[in-house]
Every structure is written in structure tokens, then in C-alpha cells.
Amino acid sequence: MKETIYTIPLTEAFEEKTECPLCVIYNKLEREAISFTLGNSYMQSDFRDITDQMGFCSHHYKKLYDYGNRLGMGLILSTHYKNLYKSLDKLLNKNILPKTTFIERLKGTTPPVNEVSEAIEERINSCFICNKLDVDMSRYISTFFYLYNSSDDFKQMFLDSKGFCLVHFNEILKQAPMHLRDKEKDDFYEQSKKMLLESIKRIQAEVEWFVDKNDYSNADKPWNNSKDAIQRGIQKIAGICPDMEVFKQTK
Ligand SMILES: [Zn+2]
Ligand SMILES: [Zn+2]
Image (cartoon, rainbow, N blue to C red; front, side):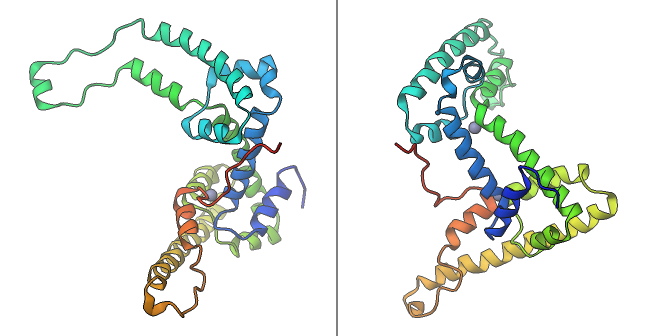
């Protein structure tokens, strides 16, 4: 098997036998991106030019805040705010609130989207970390298909796994046409579909047993696989690990 910097972490993620190996990779990359952002990179002007421009999404502001290093965050925010002021000042210069008729207001018609709101929304969702993770994750997805195509051992490991969460299943589906020939595409689709549906069925039963197990009449019965069914149940559909420890800077 040809080894790249992506093949080993991906294989190791599959070996963890979780609900989704790509969630394992994503969480690892996200922690790296957070410690990179609040490590020493914010002192470098080229990096700051990027964060001044892009900022972060709400999800990653929270993760950066939880990580610690308030001074680093302060420096990042301080110059990002200057950038934000300039762009908002320019953007809000045009008053674009659309005119509405009395009838439209009476009917409560949804107002047409205006370009300022669209630009603000783009700004709110713009995120240096999300951007970086998108690039890195797509390299891991390409590596997944490379290994699936070239290694029987890896293919078997995939087929024996619990597949992916719904979020990463969807990412894989979107990228599959670029990596598989038509015949392989059909096989892959059938395999993945079967694995996903089996997982959903299995987790539904595990969650159901979690609920039933809380009934006093089942107190002496075994948990089977249901003790952590809620965490896994959330991960499988949302692509997040709700019981993951908050990532903090080590002093
Ligand atoms: Zn996932
Ligand atoms: Zn983000």
C-alpha cells in the first residue's frame, strides 16, 4: 500500500471502529487547527491578514474561546474588527431595504432578499478554520477512494466497519463520481447504502433499548450496546461527538 501522510491516520481512524472514521479525522484536524490558530501563528502578519479577512464561524469562535489564550484571541479580534468596520462601513453605505406595498405588508409576504443581508450572512459564515478543514477533509476523502480502489485489505476494513455518519456519508457520495469508474460506482453505492441503513436500524434498536433499560422492570437486564447509544445516536446523524472533552490549551 502506497503510504502518504493521509493513509496512516485514515487507516488508524478505521481501526478505532467508531460510528464514523471521518468524524475521528475531522475532530483531530479541528483540534490541530484550533491550536495552530492560537499557537504562535497569530503573530505572523500573513496569517493575520487571512483571519482579519475571514474571521470564524460561531461554532469555531466558541471552540477558540474554550481553548484559552485570551490574549491571542484579543489580538486576532482586534485587527479583525478593524477589517470588519471597513467592510461594513462600505457595505452599509447603500440603503437597500426594498420598497413594499401596503398589500404586501398586509399579507405578510416574505420580503425579497437584499444584497446587504446576503453579504452580511456570508461574513457571518466565513471561517478560516472551516475553510482549512474543508480542504483537508477533501484530501482525506480522496485518500479513502484511493485506498478503496487499490487495497483489498482496506476495502475489507471499510466493509467490516460501521460506515460513516450521515454528514460524511453525504460528503463521500458527493465526491464518489470523481474517484470511481461506473461499475465500481454502482458497487460502492450499494455497499454504502446497505451499511448506512443497517447502522440506522442498529442504532434505533440500541436507543430503544436505552429507553427501555431505564424502566425499573429492566434494571437487572444487561445494557448490551446501549450504554452510550445516545452519544452514538447523535453522532451518526449529526456528525458531532457530543461527549467529546472540551479542547483546552495545555499550560
Ligand atoms: Zn462523520
Ligand atoms: Zn468554522
